[in-house]
Image (cartoon, rainbow, N blue to C red; front, side):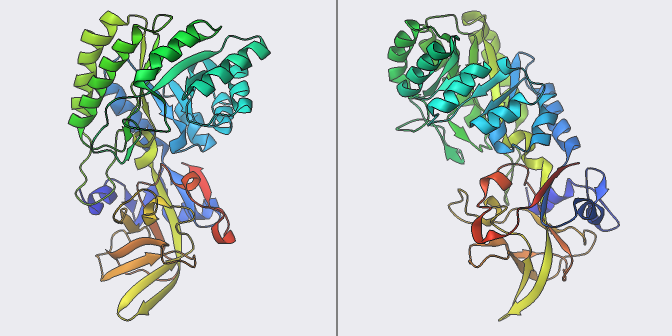
Length: 408
């Protein structure tokens, strides 16, 4: 898949990119300033519909809010998915402000403080335990508040997932409880006044190879079934994680969702339902739900040439879209799909380099990209910007204003 293929999935009218049915310049006028992020609700709807049609009906779909916690996006998704996963007290409050009941909100992530745990116990959300310390804090919070906390154990598996953008399981990890230590923790929880609902296992993110995801899901189910024997209550919650990737770079191919759906159907029918009949089986997705719905829009403020290289200097940059600059997990920097959103019908000109307004050579949004000729005032668009954009970027760096966000 090429950047041109990604751009071709978006409509354009009169040479302007269309987002949420609105031409780009009109959308910029509506927002009132550049830069901004825009998320297309129809593309989010379409992704959820595709998942519903492809994954087996017994799979519950959870939104991992850390991918994009914009309240309007979360409110929209709360009506489409079965549950929401949060990773901080602020994200938890955002989720609680939606129509999603607290019983379908889970709270994961290492380093939960006593205050955060107390808030979660009071709210009645499911707390995914990352350590023995967290477990004891939860028990103490329940005793203090006179409530019975709901918990699941996040397990650090004894296997790793190859091909993931970030490995979050296998070997030593800050995430979860090592699989071999889980039985002892379950025994301790069994003597406390807590409701142990089940397990969460998430081994890696941003994987584009269906066969690797299928293998990880199969091994995860095997691990859950072995740990279920030590659980003090019947297992009612099995979170298989997610890790579904989206294409960002040249030669990335879209994930084969059908193969994953077939594998999950087989696991449900032959492994999970016969052995854990009360379990709600969850797939937790963030990037895959929202990543391809978003664009980052920034305006050209200068066009300059330096020793034969043309630079488009824009009013945004890595302080808003760190991942596109290559400084958010890329071992070798590669360009995100980029276009001139106000020149969509024009042919490519000589390659140009798109840079932001920060005083660092790291502020690079497109390196020697073939693009139509752009001048001061044109709008540059970075695609695949719906996940890990604004809130995953150093917005305070050099004191530039924060960009707007809109759901259209």
